[in-house]
Amino acid sequence: KEVRNVGIVKDIEKVEEVKDINNEDVEKDVREDVREDVREDVREDVREDVREDVREDVREDVREDVKEDVREDVEEDVEKLLENVFLI
Image (cartoon, rainbow, N blue to C red):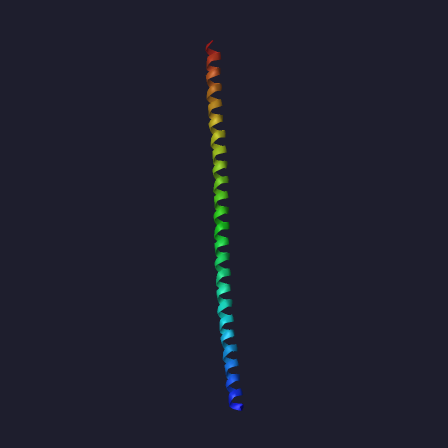
């Protein structure tokens, strides 16, 4: 009977060992999944930040270009008007 009990104890120890190994594997898998999720979240956040930065830069560049174009157009128009006034 004692031999049988020893066999049962060894079986229980093997089961516990397998559980520990499985738990470690699960923990490793979960850690890797979390790492990958975090990496993807960070990538997406960075992409969105870059997109927004580029949009804002383009908006600002366009505003400045339009302001400069309008200034130049107004200056030209004023010069033409002044020329016309002095010619009359």
